Image 1 (cartoon, helix red, strand yellow):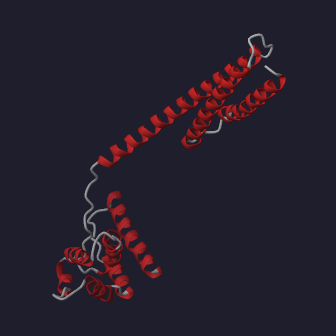
Image 2 (cartoon, helix red, strand yellow):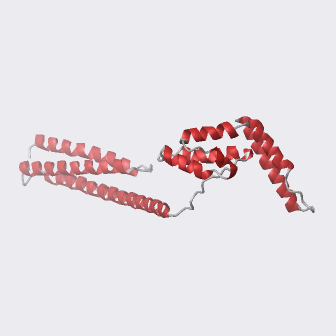
Image 3 (cartoon, one colour):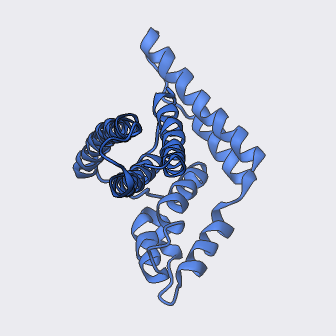
Length: 235
């Protein structure tokens, strides 16, 4: 083998070695590696193996049996091929672990999706002013904001949610929007709502004997209505 040919082949081997070193450094970095980058490195290794195969063929075409360059260059090619295989195996193992982890997560998500949650009950409104804002918030969240429902379905649910004397506001030709607006005009009255809450406090059940339980019940009821009043004021 001529010295010039040896230099060319050594340069080609050197270029492959530089790139392999970069991949080794990437693999030795403790940072977590994503699947996309790892698969890209596998493709790069595949191209390096092809290059090394081409270099080997060129080497055998020009080498002489008694060449002094035979053993060092062939040994270098073998070492680079071994490095390619070692890195490939490491990447394959990491990808396998990533797939196992992803499958485990997907399995947990599928199990969760199959869990039967209790049905959410439709909120009811009986015409009590102090219940209006609580009813409206729940109904808007469950029905009004549900884009999968059309107005006819929303109207059905709104009518179904009304009980007692408040059902008298329903008209035959009501649309969903007109009925909801009618309820708002009638019951979204801050003064009447606040008065209703204070009336609930004034007419709380009178206890015949003192006890910690009765006192706690009284405190909780008062606190509930006073908190509701604060919310009404801020609306």
